[in-house]
Length: 138
Image 1: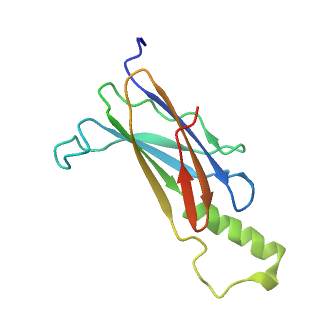
Image 2: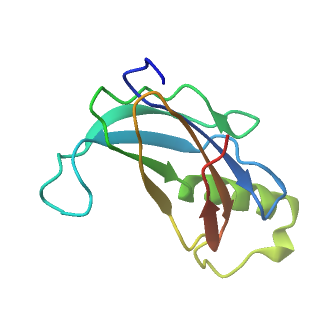
């Protein structure tokens, strides 16, 4: 049995449209206590801080949730990442410019998950402009 009093969280993002890590994506972490099954009965979300993904797409320095946390939310700001990626692609191939259509269907991704004290939660995000998938990693 663990003697830790809080959970810990890390994440990484893989851009499946490019087949590589997504660098420079802002990630914010929030925490709350209470039960999610009864909305309004749980605690309010508390912003804990944030970071951004490194060259390997990893975000290892997220603040630890406080003692008593039962749920964590990771918020990923993916629209700026894809906007920059699209701008870079247009510089490389100006003939491929579209007519101003949005480059991403999901401008942000918010993932909420339950935590227990003493556990580490690694939550990878597999991302492309029109979809995403998450899972509990190791």
